[in-house]
Length: 133
Image (cartoon, rainbow, N blue to C red):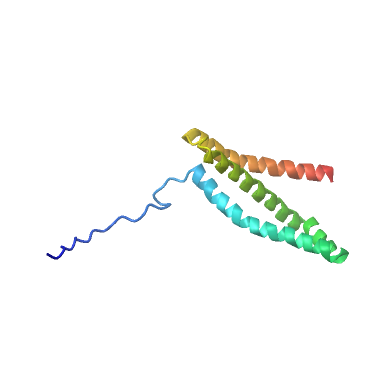
């Protein structure tokens, strides 16, 4: 006996962003991925600085000029925030790996703290750098 064909029924699509309400944990998850990707650009900046340092005074002077300009400082400020945000996001995930902070209120507090903490750390680092310069 041949199997009978099942009638085709329109299957629902997987839920996506239009179904879910945007939450802090979703936003910080996306930011963590974006900052992780952006760190590749920052690593290139560090590599450029190191190559210029090894290449001699002329190359280092040009790189020093660029990083000392207003656009260079904005790039470095952004890189500092990206690094701090990704680090705090990684620490948040590390805490979650131990099964701690998974309840709704703690999860939301950690997500907000990641953003707020990264901004505060960036400002403290830059304030210290500019004062100690």
